[in-house]
Structure formats: C-alpha cells, structure tokens
Image (cartoon, rainbow over all chains, first blue to last red; front, side, top):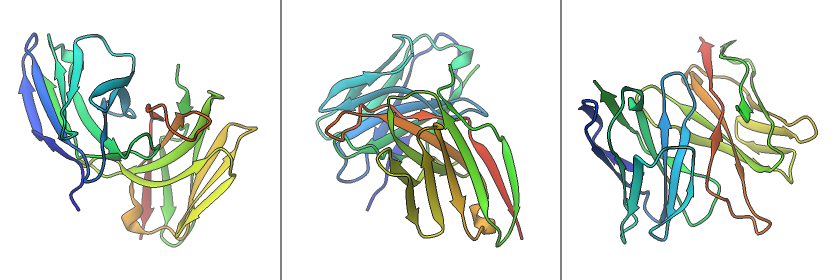
Length: 112
Length: 117
C-alpha cells in the first residue's frame, strides 16, 4: 500500500525563480493538502484540493498556487521565490473530507 | 495569533515511565484534535485523534485526553520506549455538523520527546 510520495526530495533555487513541487496521494485518497514547515515550527496550512478545486486556503500570498489532476495527484507552484520561502514543504492526503491527514516525507526547498 | 500552543519545547523521560505531552488551544470552533510524531528527515506520522464529543481515546500505549472547558488536551505514552524519541505535534481542525472537516489542520510548535534507556 503506497503512502504519500513527494518529489523532488531536495531543491535549491535562487531568489526570483519559480518552483514546482509534486505529490501523489496515498492509495485510495482523493484529497490533497499542502503545508509549509519552517525550522523549529509546526506545519502551516497552504491550501487543500478536493475534486480538482481549491477547497480552502491559508494565509499565503498568491505567489503560492496549486493544481490537482484527475488522478488526484497535485502540484504546488511558488513564483518569485524569496529567501523566506526556504522550508520543508509537506503534502498530506485524506479520503474525501475526513479529518485525519497522512503526510509525505516532504520536499526541502532552499532559496539562495 | 497562535491558536494551538505546545508550551513545553522539550521533555525528557526514562524508559518504562509515562510521557505526558500537553497542548492548549484558543479557537472554540475546533472540534477535532490529532497528534502526530515526526522523526528527522521524515514527514509527520499520524498517531491518534479525538473528537470533541469525547474526553478520552486510547490506542495501545497512546491515550489522548481532552478537557474542552479548559481548552486543553494531553497525550500519554505508557510505557515510554527509546523509539518514541521524536518531535510530537498537536493539531486541531474545525468541521461541520455532518462530521466532515473544513480541511485545515492548525499545528502547535511541537515538543521534542527524549526517552532515555
């Protein structure tokens, strides 16, 4: 039973660049959420996708955008990267609108 | 505005003893609470959850207690094992009367648990 997978594992970008992170949900799950975790902090909710629509959004600027595909996989796009975007980006999946979310290993983004 | 707080950055416990991790919240709309464990270089792993209609939920060595009037929950691990050493996050969510989540999990800052052999 495949869990949540994310790619790439690590990524280094420079300020002003754009980045795309990818996530495949756990088998049987159709809802995907994205979180940003800064060092020493808890994960912060970016947004959630359900039925290919953005269902809920956290306090992140429009530079952060996403997409969900018909196979339920998802992408997180960040434009005009800032140094402060350096963080661990976590994808979580769930079945429908359930409360429990299951996390992937994350993508470590470093912005120089 | 930190709606979920874990006021103890770290906790050290002897193997075999009880570990108690605490969490406080301020948002009365939260109706579901979860605990996650995180090892370095891994994503958070779901441990146990509790609905606001309950005051206790138990799963093996893990028990979560919820005190709604105090807006406080705690995770008890008995007996503690060295493999339990990790960062523990408390998370909260709001949902509708039908029992479905609005989606967002709000996390605390985490507590580093160290279990000594």
